[in-house]
Length: 576
DNA sequence: TAGCCTTGCGCG
DNA sequence: AAAGCGCGCAAGGCTA
Image (cartoon, rainbow, N blue to C red; front, side):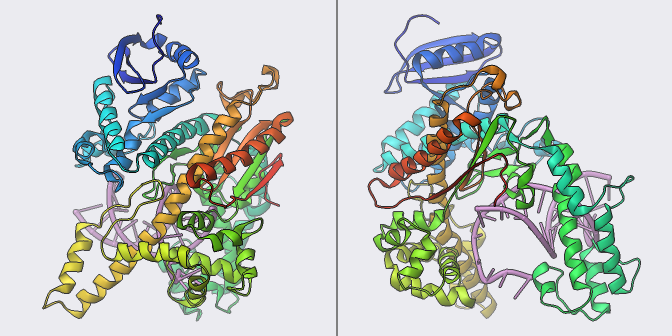
């Protein structure tokens, strides 16, 4: 690495023998280019990172960063071309999307590890969508320039810069979360399973307590061979003994009075634990004291992360006790109180709702304002407003919120109306909802034709309402996801600046780039878990809180709203 | 027998 | 059977 001006950006691309690097100045003008052999790549990147702290531009974060992390190289900033392409291509804030939209090769699905990919992935007729984004430097540079132009040409370029930076930072976090893993105590998990399901039995037989529950169900059904795992068969068995339900869901069963109900609900609960997070899950997903789920940034239309494998987004609260810090380490478990209503208050500029949220539980604040009588009512009403409830208690309470918080409610009502009319809506930073499908539009025009049937009209109206509820929620859920990305990105930086502990106090199972300092270990929409040496736990907890305040300012400036956190420092993630 | 669909339930 | 959004996953049943 020779003497050269500091590049603001470095574009990376694959070559046959390693990587091509393109050095760009702050205007994204190229002023240098080099080829690095594969064996030297991580050390070159490491040195460039410490010398210049550039923003790395690459086609797809997991395909570059996983390997760097494995070799102990951490970077501060990147620009993920695939993720940013998806945002800019659809954003209503971009005035001229044609160039980005034309670059179809960047419409790539999230990368899936070769070992996890099903063979069919490459046989489908929409193969180009799954082919992955181009990985050579010239293609990356060209796409980067297109994206820069798209952002620069926007009247809201500051928001789009923030969004693309946050999305890219999220991609780094996702790779780091996978590399670090969530500390998981397999023995504690096993104890929970044995305690709940009973002793494991050989030969694939059901564990003791589960089998006992099954026997009680069969006794109540008067049928020793009744099948409990097949919905149609179970339904017929229930009908035979006079339990006339239409489904076998918990909600409907719970309303029935019959000796079979209690053991059946018990059986379903235990059976669910066994199949979703039993010993099979444990041996498949927990290795060497870590649960390493695959996070998929931007995997949900709203901008939330999805996950692939391991059910990272569905870990039952029941198992939280198995999340356990390494010896001498602690967990900082933090979640945001009522994130979405707070985000709604901020983005709509509703000072009355912000006032209700100040210094307290937001739902309590709504009660104190006199809009509704109880906290439970406030919660049901607020969720109903954000999800589009029209019936039941929720639908009945929403109008009271409309009177008390017209600006906030006006924002979601407008989003719903736009969606019903076939329009698109955008989050605070500019992520934009997909346009309606051709089928949806066809159904709407069909309903306006002179010979449209009543069924045509009913269907069109139902689909319009469905879409209205989607766009109503999109703006809130999507902006909440943006806030959470900003929180994560800021927190990641703060944790990296905390002091290391000596190597012998490290958490070697967390991977070389994290082993000796506080690091993120889990993220779920509005919650983070940080794994930290005990002596830095307070500093890490402070970082979590400071990052939340920082994220609020980054998105909403001086708007008087706090994002309250519930922060706990403990050895397990068990909720008290 | 593979692949798709439905049901049900876990999470926010 | 949730009312009212967004997901992933396992299991059974159906179909080609």
